[in-house]
Length: 124
View: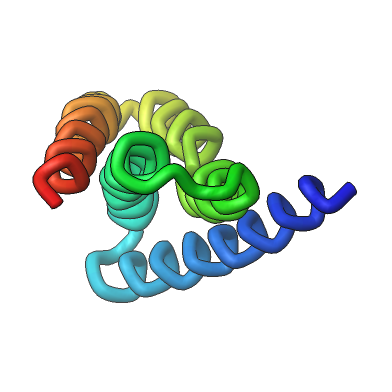
């Protein structure tokens, strides 16, 4: 039961952060392209890369920290389901170029951010 509570706490904080970032990005950049989703996915990829290296290779942390941060917070922050929906809506609206940018941005930048996070954590 404690594991579920830890994941729920992290997830709720991550979900609130996702909402705040997406709202900010929409206000700042407009709603034509889902910048907020791209931003939280790339930042989340960096964070999970760095965090998992730190807690599995540098400092062996209590497994509850992994549940709180990686499963809960980062899981609540990143938005793959939103990415899928928003991309399909762009396709339905015949915004094929934006859909392609969204797919490429999330995958390429996401993988790069994960690698960068892992490299940064290993350099510490």
